[in-house]
Length: 599
Image 1 (tube, rainbow, N blue to C red):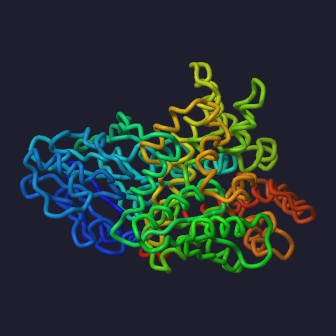
Image 2: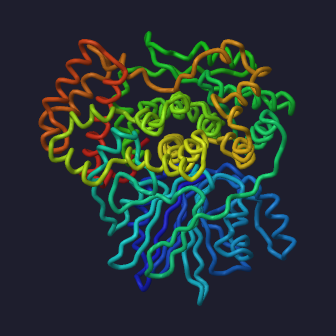
Image 3: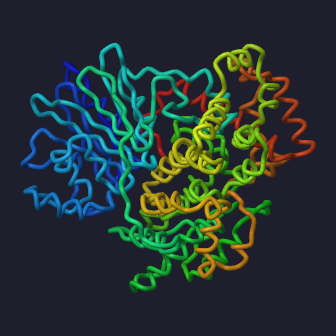
């Protein structure tokens, strides 16, 4: 697991070392163990390494003596690297160590840009081929988009630059950006930027399962490749058990995140089982809560899971007075607005994981998307012909009527003219249905292709790596994804298959409880005397909103006043989302985020 960076331009000078050092410094929190950047005329390639596999080997960029001119960097893990190394060694390739990314130059030599089709893992890869007559840059990300890669192409000079994180990418000279005009509407309508766009004009993200080919002076050509082919492994519990055991193996300490729900509970139970059967030390589990008495706490459920699995349980209690600082830091690390208050919880949780000596954490992310677990899915399945609108409305931080009420007349007309992100999602779902997909399949396809990587996985990647922790996701491994997609609709509705898999592993209280997201009790905290009130008031001051020209300050003030008289989750989320967008706008105004921004 690492942070990677690089640039590629035809006929350009060698990039300045100071500039490359600045780019590296902005994402070094995710790779504190080793730093190296190589460069030449018109190119650079670098890595900030978090040593997980073969910590003593694996220096990046990867190079093999018998393949001069081929260099590669990797962010992530390649789980089938031993198998690939054996096959490549049989073809005459030789490797200096056992690090997973060391196979990349040889794999490229054998398969060219199709090399990524052979990778089983979570990864963002950048590979430079500097051999005469074949000069090119190849970029690739895993099939689910677990490891993001951000790109900037300048059509004026034909240069392409990339980095694992947006703040690092902005440290490259010549990267010009501005907030997208529809960024506010996107945050309120869908909570995060979808598709290949970020909230910044000029910066894109490579979509899941894609490979980009960059020729000298040309724009990246992005193609979606064939997915990695996984072998069938049995029923749901068998498939998940196999992946948990595989991902629980590492050359550094491994723990599990336990929210108290079904998904993380399954991962926890199977990982603890594996530890006992291999005579390993007991599994450590981590759960985050907030000091004081707040509604919807899951701490008791997490403790029940930990007792059943016999783990060493850590209940991390965050002081609510710290929330303002946490929000600023999460916005800076993400580089774009994410309206879910879960960002603060995620950041604080992985801080505790790292402070307790763990480098790898297993999580339950991805289960809801694959196994139909969200309430919005069930509501859409029960709805009439307007089911797609029902589903899209449930994604929003602010309902359509609320956000249109809050917009200035100019901004409302602007969004109506160009269309909202919510409209595009509804149209995609309707098109899938018209092409013959059933509702659940259409929703699952959208969730896994666009919402999961943009909304959840970028957050998980950036905020775990803010503390140099590698988050591993058993539910998103190819065998589990293939298995889930092969199940009949009934087994995928409401996570029925997962409830059956957890019947013998989890306490009855966890199996019977209603679904609840791991998040922040924002409605209660944004109440009179609450720890978030002053922060939101500051972000939504009339002076700020008038300057932005998108939100009517008088209507935002009335919404806050009504919420303080009678707090509601919906009003709280709307106010929170507006505040996050305003804070992000403030960060972007200067965004040159200070080099070496601390975690």
